[in-house]
Length: 140
Image (cartoon, rainbow, N blue to C red):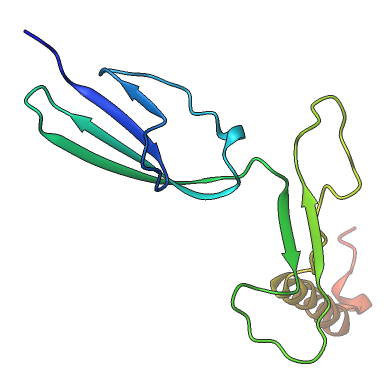
């Protein structure tokens, strides 16, 4: 019996498949040859009776440096002048660690300030109401 099962693999909206296999198959997708951004892997499989099946898998490639923008959000409405910090860092070098630009500076979150303020307020309350010698008498 002739086995005419076939799997065709397409990338994005290409008309020609970049690979054709007989099932089952295991292959390595080299994303270094694909541009960064959102892509779609389309898999078309044909059964031995000629019936086709389709599966699409959305994925995102990020081989280049990670880009971080602080000060401007996605679809944000802005006016006047706004300070923007842009940082780009990647992992191309395996033998050395670059400290400069490895982290993106961010402001301290508001909940941390609220926690610190609560602690300081409790410390002042304790000092004002309980800092007197009669509360600290010796048992000896």
